[in-house]
Amino acid sequence: MPATPGVASVLLAAAAAAVLGAPASAPWAPAADPEPVTIAAIGDSITRATNAAGWYGDHPSLSWSTGFNPLDGLSSHYERRIRARPWPWPRELNVAAAGATIADAPAQARRVVGRGAEIVTFLLGANDLCAPSPERMTSLGEFRSDLETAMAVLADGLPEGRVYVASIPNVHRLWLLYRNDPVASSFWRLGRTCPSMLDPANTPRDRFHVFVRQLAFNYVLADVCSAYPRCVFDHYALYGHEFTTAEVSRLDYFHPSLRGQHTIAEITWRAWSVAGESAPSG
Image (cartoon, rainbow, N blue to C red; front, side, top):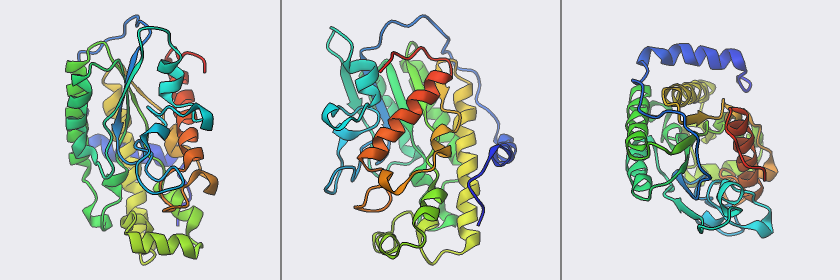
């Protein structure tokens, strides 16, 4: 099996995905921004903090993006960017949904626009990879089209907003982490968890197919975001992180644990700050 890809692999995926074309330039333009008071999150079960606590279900108060749980040391983007700000009272909106795919991004974007969010975090794509089989993953063309539609909704509806796009965490890394753990394998098999990658019956060719598709998806996220001056990509930082067992929920051996949520918040915070954004300290 291939190791976690380096720069060369990312560039290879970029060349393959580039044939799909890039979106036309959008009406966002850099501007001097006031301190934001509203943050919204577009995403899937990762952003809903599914199974991040000690019991099953969604725990949005533990979300890396919009969560508020200072006693557990979460340090979400909401806590860092918004909650610490004085009056007017800060607001947050988490429209992420467990099971969401990139096809759900336009609808989630419209909900975010309806609330007039000033900061939007975007983390979608894992469920487009985690199909019943590698052959049923979302195509690159569909992925780009739905992403472009969502970004256009945000650009038109939030001309002064900022959108922060995270790369998809490395699902192949998760397989490497637990491939010899019989308990994790049992959870994956019984729960039909990301079967395209994690089904123990998969062949090396199956997993490599998913591995390459993820490289291409992350390239498309970077490429589409780059067309919008008010969009910031994490430069593959979240994809490149090698999650540890402590950062993965023991309820399903798939979703981030509370420590994993904190890690995602920290990684994206650093990446987006390095990308040139004036991030408040926190």
